[in-house]
Length: 413
Image (cartoon, rainbow, N blue to C red; front, side, top):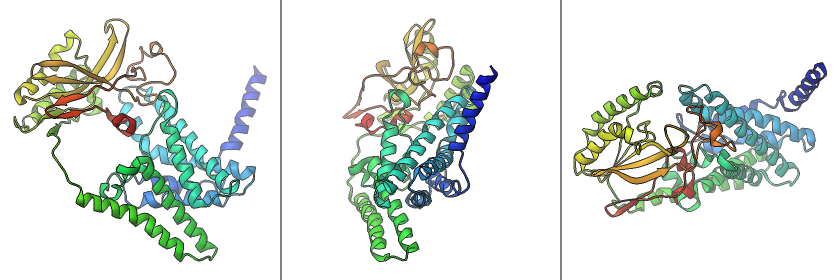
């Protein structure tokens, strides 16, 4: 037993020496992490997406070419990833801790994935710069965009395309109008390219090399795509596809812990909001994910969804609302789904969309069978949906994406 403990201590010490950041490996990676995090809500600043990667890129460029340089790149990337992803995704822990303490290991699992990805970015950037000898303005966009693509295509429900760099400018949609051509990943490549060009300009200035040509290139790289987006926003012809009322009860998380209180609070909030919608003013009403924490297609819960039926009848339009779908027996073994349903004036329809892209660890623990998780409420036990049912309303057809799924372009297509 003593030998086992000593061996474990030696392994821990070796790992700590290998991975723990050393002096000179913290400041610039941390600065990049903070700047990039400021690109997203709640701050959602305009400038950081264009310069946030510059300190990190310059730091990797200045590392030695040997194995110690590669190790340093990984260690500094752990600092960068911990700060960047921690600040961007902190809200997951805050939102879920109300429901279960298992939110802590779920959040830790997510962070391990993301920080590991950051280490891969640092290693690959070092490899491109010091082994392949690629210019910084080429190496950075390739390394960063490849990493974002990689995390969006991890196996099982490990995949997570949340909050990529390409979505950091959603607060300024006119500036990224070219996203309709290149997609979010194309915007990511563009922003990483601009960061790489600016970092290369800093290197030129430090070496007292000519800077005018690169400055002009940076100016063109920024203004041409932006200019196209502004022009597109001014000239785009809009047409009415449908009139949709989006209703958000906005029930605090701590109230949702008690199912009956959550239902009562939701109905009270909906009653106030729905009074503001005039009959004939909309074609469709959309309510949020898990509007009601019930099984609408189970007869025993019909009374809980009756108010939604009343809204559909009063307005004369369908109401899309979130609730829990299931397969199996709700009184025995069953698999729950994060689902969307449609209530028409005539009653609950057969339409049911079950969420297909699930939040790793939170909605589904990767690779583990459903049966292992059925006894753990609010933790990783949701089933993966199938199919893409469409809702026909008048002359328009609507598809459904639930929350996190909106980050998957293939789902929207």
